[in-house]
Length: 223
Image 1 (tube, rainbow, N blue to C red):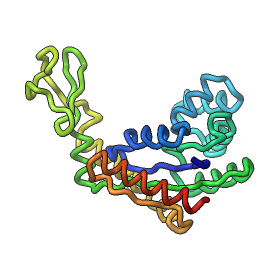
Image 2 (image 1 turned 60 degrees about the vertical axis):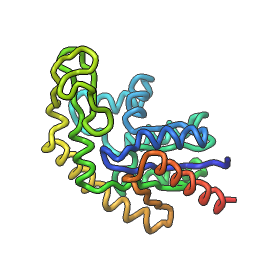
Image 3 (image 1 turned 30 degrees about the horizontal axis):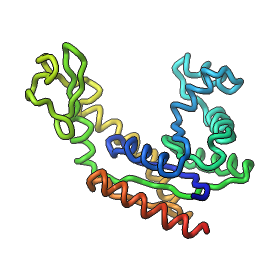
């Protein structure tokens, strides 16, 4: 397949991780998340990584110019020369514009922006369904992976509970932040003609098939 440079967008609970794994395997491209990039740069001790670490250690957000520098370094690495999947970046229009500038410097361009769409109520159900065993730490999900013993762990019989960061209040806050950040970004990419919306309510296998169709159409356009 020809080079594909993809941005994957989707709210918490949309099933992005599953579909990112499919896309990367299908296209033989690396999955590059913003968090992984920052951690790798810090671990690698690069100048930008050390600068990012100084912000992170003091509890501050890493400024866009530092993040963009790290993105540029990462996209210039050998494994990303044949394409990449960006996940969690860009999050804002200034980041999107800076990404375009960085890619222009590498003589590259974004091929496709994929947005996995899931209704708000369904996202809340997905995000608040996780249960954890107090005794052994095993995790379950009320929808996707329920315990065979109901409110008790199927492994050790321990009591299952919901973590505070899986509460409905926390889930709502996460979604509100995501929607506030992402709405202008989706509008921006819609205007470029590169945005494709995928129905994330479909069964996982059908979402994957829709993605396969979108990729085939884009590859046909590029050829």
